[in-house]
Amino acid sequence: MVSKQQLQIVYGITIALLVIGVIAYAAAPVSAPDQPIRIMFKNVGGNVLFDHKTHTHDSGYGISCLDCHHTSEEGETQPELCGDCHESSSDDEDMPNRTDAFHIMCKNCHADLEVVTAPVDCSGCHFTAN
Amino acid sequence: MLNQNKFVVSHAPFWHNGSSVTERTYHTILAALPAVFFGIIQYGWPAISVVSLSVSTAILWELLLNRFTKRPATIGDGNAALLGLIFGMMIPAAAPWWAVLTGTFITVVIGKQIFGGIGGNVFHPVLVALAILKVSWGDFFDHDIALVNFDLNFAGIHPLSALKYYGVAAIDRFTITGLLLGQQAGGIGATFGLGLLLGGIYLMLRGFIRWEIALTFLAGVFVTASIFNLADASRFAGPVFHIVTGYTLIGAFFLATEDSSSPVNFLPMLIYGFGGGIMTVLIRNIGVYPDGVIFAILVMNLVHPLLDKIRPKALGKEV
Image 1 (cartoon, each protein chain N blue to C red):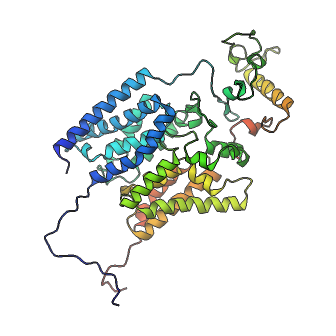
Image 2: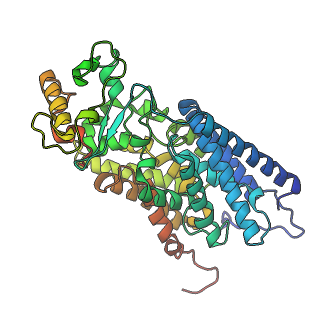
Image 3: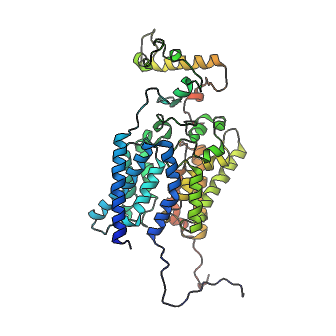
């Protein structure tokens, strides 16, 4: 049997946690940082978890923004996004669709590197159950 | 004959030793706190938001149901708070508020109160909620997707996803010590293995959970993962990796041992725990999901009434 005093303590804790929860959700929402950390590319071939920070940061591979965001200019802090030009489906021969653009960009770079950690086969990037 | 164990009962009056449901739930909450605090340190304010909202709304749903069904308030026993806490521990820190609210509603109302409240639920209420939410809004509860905006000082991919999708070679980046110390993506309070282990040992020593279930669950995972690993080490990870990753430890100590949805007799408890461990690794290694703990324990919850048919022989009854 729970005493009235115990019940009051539970009421107090509930209200306190509710207030903390609501304030914390409002004050500190989870939002995407200016420079992405990881990006999940969802697609029918199996999702791809791209570690943007590891590719760009000096402690990682230190790749220049321009190597991938090829339309940007030197020193630009907000490069154009891939999807701004490369649409999900495209008949334009000069503008590959998004899937082709990613495949060309990622695979060519990985193939040039010739290191084991840079996969070029499908299952090296796509989430496909083994 | 002289050394025969006998159950000796003294004569009346009897004295209650003070143990209660309330004591049990608050000690379980206490045992879970190290893992929760670790999650809060790791993920910061978002983790505080999720856990606070999860615990408070679980209590409020229960209170609302108490009022609605015109029954006395049961929130004082701490069970709703415990369920809210475990739900909060298992979901990613980026879970939106409405998902937490829906999750605690399913946990408390559909998982527990519909069955008549504490002690009446067939399945672990939190697992019912997680299974429904994972099927309904998988992306919000997929740790790989939900945690993309968190800058972690270890590999951002969930270790079981790395194993499932990229094979054994991809788990070289994880060390057992690191995984045990929480260096893995996952639920807020489900990744700090050492904290969960200490909490579990405390609960077992105090008799708040049954060691028979917790240890056989881990043994089931260990043995099954060892068999797979011995059969083909190039495809299947070793047993220790399976024990320290995903929901294994929180499953062994805080989920499988829930008293209403687990057996009470000795042999059934061993079968239940071991079966849960086997199912976990089967789902992980040959199933679709990277982690199998949720569905493995739900399946064992389902068969537990059958397992409890295995009873000790009644005294004095002729065979």
